[in-house]
Length: 77
Length: 77
Image (cartoon, rainbow over all chains, first blue to last red; front, side, top):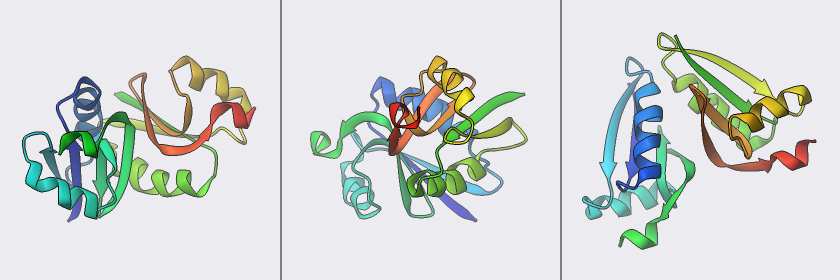
């Protein structure tokens, strides 16, 4: 099973991206996990390890894709 | 049927995003079209109309999502 993690911080840019992008992913191929970094601050280190620099971001099998630009990770710490 | 258009310009950032993101989309829900704006310059106006400002970008049902940052559309004209 492929692995998709959608990181967001609850901002309007994130929520729009989450609804459209996360739901467009083929869930028969990808296990989709959604992480709210504003609420789950202990996940910020994992996001950074995958190369995430801003949210919203989608990590597909460990590769980061930044979607539009909501907030820099430093703003969430 | 939902509509997804992936705009790119053949750059390495685009190709990586295309392979991962475009293929992750649920093709039972979305009709996915891939447009190479470097080769199909007549499509640039359509991309701009959807709000696309840089490639690679994914337009889901008319809403633009910019992925990472490859090239500004002005560089392709």
